[in-house]
Amino acid sequence: MPPYTNSRSHQQESNVPTSKAGSSALQEFEGAKAEFPDALANNELIYRVTNTLKKYGYGKTTLLATSLCCDEVNRALENDFEKHYGSHFNMGGLAGFAFGGVTSFTAMAHHIPDDGSCLIVYGPH
Image (cartoon, rainbow, N blue to C red; front, side):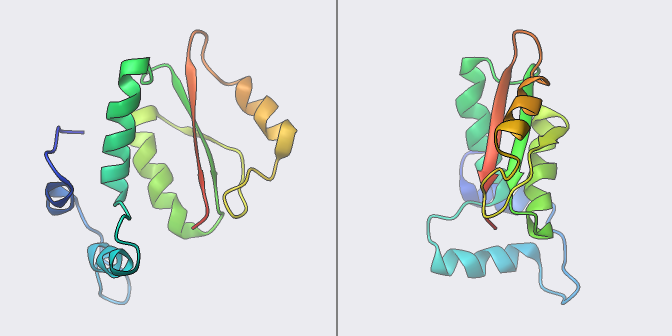
């Protein structure tokens, strides 16, 4: 992702999809931001995460593991993270908790590249 200077430029340069109702995702995000002033757009979150973790070696040898609520609203976040870390290992999620338990963590651990790392993204919708 290009080195943006602030959140506003992230939003302006992003490709904002339009929902069936005719309102853009940006408008929906602005509505959420009114209630949650510290909320971040996906591109801002990913920019902060990737820039923070790359100094610790996260990148090409990082397995992306997700445990997000299974609602389709979260697929955009997974897809956006995949652009930086490649395909993800889905651990399943209910309210942001990996519902596969020890089994899903064990399976996920077997997919971490040799000398690699794992980034676990979790959360409710």
